[in-house]
Length: 290
Image (cartoon, rainbow, N blue to C red):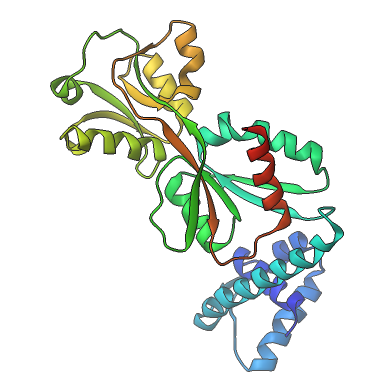
C-alpha cells in the first residue's frame, strides 16, 4: 500500500466518479482504476460498488476512507516538518478565524507576514468560534483566531488583541433597561458566533434569558446583520470595527449599553507540532501590537 494509492482512493471516494477524480488528481483513468484494483486485490476486499457507470463506497470503503484520510494527514504533517529545515523558505500556514477578525483585524498582520516570508503560503478559512475550535482540534488549521470563549481541554487559547462590542440602531435612545431589551426587535448572528455568545452572556448577567428576546432575523455574517439594521429591521450588537463607518456617517447610532472590552483569542492545539511559520506569525503579531 502506497501513499499514492491512498491519495487516489480518497480522490475517487470523495467524488464517487473515476474519471473526474483522475482529472483532479492529474493521473490517467487507467492509473486510477489500477490503484483501486491493487488495493482491493492485495487485501481481498471490495471498496466500491460498480453500478452501471456509477460507483458507490461499500461499507468497507467507508471505514477505509476515514483511515486513509488520517494517514494522508499524518504524511502531510511529516512532509511539512521536514520542509521547515529550509528556514521558512517553503510551507503552508493553515489558519481559521471568525468573520470579524478576518474582515477587520487579521489582514494587516497577514500582509506584514507575506512581506517578511513571501515563500510561505497562507491558507485561511472563515468560521464562527465553535467551528474554528473544531478545525484546530481536528488539525485542519494550526492556528485559530476567535472572539468567543473556548471550553476544550485540547486547545490552548490566550488573548491576542481586544475589541469592543456596541449596541446599534437607526434611532438614538436615551436609556436602556431590561424592559427595553425585551421589547426591542433584534437582528442576531447565528448561534455559535462569538459576537452572539458574548451578548447572550451580558444578558444573563442582567438576569435576562436570551430566549426571551424578540429576534426578527438571524443572519450568518456581520455584513448581513449590519445591512439589516441600516434598513431599519431592528437593533443589533456588533463589533465597533464593523460599525465604525456607519457611525461616522450618521447612518447608525451607538445606544447606551456598556460591554466590557472583548478579547480576541488565539487558538492552538496543545499536542500538535508547532510549526515555524505559525510561531513566526504569532511573533510578528506581538511585535506589531506593542
